[in-house]
Length: 316
Image (cartoon, rainbow, N blue to C red; front, side, top):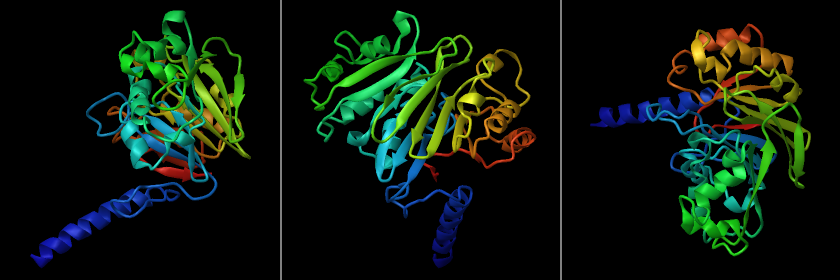
């Protein structure tokens, strides 16, 4: 029995070492403790690293930006985000904003769960929510109203759109233009400033977001095909470019209307002179093909390259 217990312990140790050795900047707490980012500085954390599939054992792509010990920005609260938010030890009261790169189940579905879960918390200020502005029927304001409005999917949460909410705060939704090429930059706090530009994602309105904090910049490009060729300029000089790795280099057909292949991601990172390229939204089409994707990217970009995993945290 002693050998059996020793083998189990060794297997656990090896799994832990493999997870942490692949992400040298990640800080993990001991088993059963809450993983957290560093006590000081600017960090981004991968809450979910997968796509819409229910067979990849990953949450949908979602991200947190930490400043010192506070989670200040939540990007794309899709399936699994509420659980990962809790596991990360984040406090909903600390958020300065929530942003959507696009309006889809995989980028928005856990917003309602987070709102309901915040009841009884300490938040006492507006929660700004920003997303793509398109035709009225699909604008972010209308979208959120259809989700949590009085006649929406979850009418019991409708008071969150008022100052009389059980959560103690109001959700303030704002649409950001998702057509054309104009850069939007109309929001900032004492902690951070936000900017956005429209990106091409087939026929789906989509945005890339840039968050600037102190002397650092992080760009969440989300899913884009790069047909507009605007991401490199938008990400210029960023400390981290976080893009989605949804299709492999040899992908053909309509999927390339929605997603960039690895070599295109490498070109964007190189042209933007970004310090780090992070690949999220890893799908079953790309998982297991990381070596080929790395080769295609590194033909153009020689900076640090990260294949995102759940709850990894990176300091800038």
